[in-house]
Amino acid sequence: MINILVSSCLIGINCKWNGRNNLKDKVVGLGNHYNLVPFCSEVLGGMPIPRIPSEIRGNKVFNQIELDVTKYFELGAKKVLEIAISNHCKYAILKDHSPSCGTHLIYDGTFTRTLIEGKGYTTRLLEKNGIKVFSEDEVDLLLKEIEQ
Image (cartoon, rainbow, N blue to C red; front, side, top):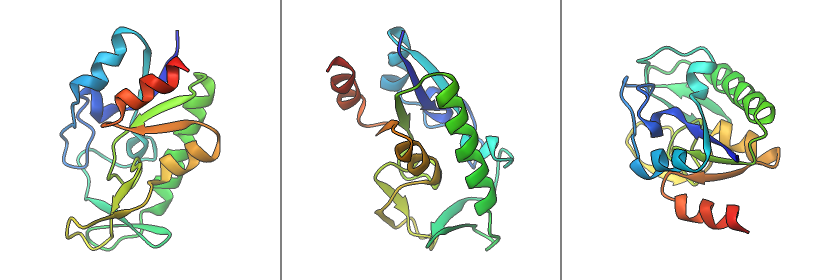
């Protein structure tokens, strides 16, 4: 069976910065045909639930009270890569807009909910290591990729 790495929040696990989730039924439905390997890189990196929101600014990640929390994002990304490798995951579905899992867009670091093109720390590391990353809105695109 194919293993797919997935942001835990997308399958209903309450691990977001505010202690909630981003449940997407279409992502959960993948579990009927594939083995989902859930993770939260921010928690794996040592951040609590709930936590102060964080955004990428330049090459660093700062939380809303201006603390540099980059080290948590780097550590979490490394741990997720280890999980992906040990589970032979070639694909991942990640939460877009996140400073960890952003696939196409991330917040601009001003905490004004302004989105810019960019990728989160975990997404960058996974892609650098050959894992194909899709957003929660690209389930159909992932399925086409798997079929090929």
